[in-house]
Length: 208
Image (cartoon, rainbow, N blue to C red; front, side, top):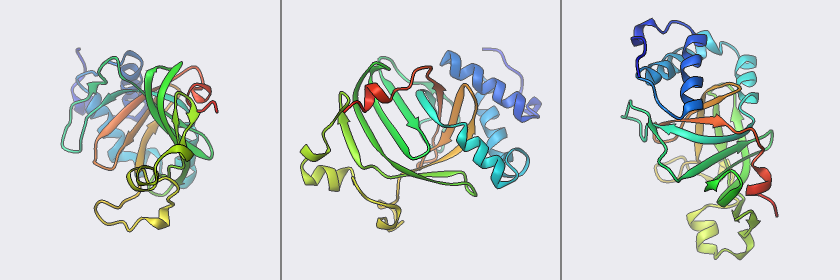
């Protein structure tokens, strides 16, 4: 698609407009990465210059989200659509972070849920996983210990991680949030963009 050269992106509003359009259509524009980069580079100075601004941005991230675009890793600078029929979601509220996969927002096959810790200074959300759900039903207590405690790390808290390679707590750095879009960087450096779902996914993912 046609778009402006990256050096003409000069404001948060302009960059966010590009991101919102791409998240709504699930289609990347030529300057989507440059729009994200503009916000990321100016986040702690121009865009979120104080703790309150970062807390406001974080509060706007609460809701149910569908993953639509991702770079795949830290060295990649091209966003690609999430291949169909994969439906991947995230849900954030004041206490918990949940994510998972399904067929659509009404049929969720696998989901994880647990408390988060948000540090406004670094705009970082640390994630703890307490429970696993299959088709909306909590199966945590039925999981073998080598899966629940070993592979998934269920019940671990930030202090239980050493911080060394291979034993770091899952975390996202929140780059931007709006009424339409959520942008975050994962632990490997890849950037993902979600579009806001109109319906709260809690019932389908965590019904019992």
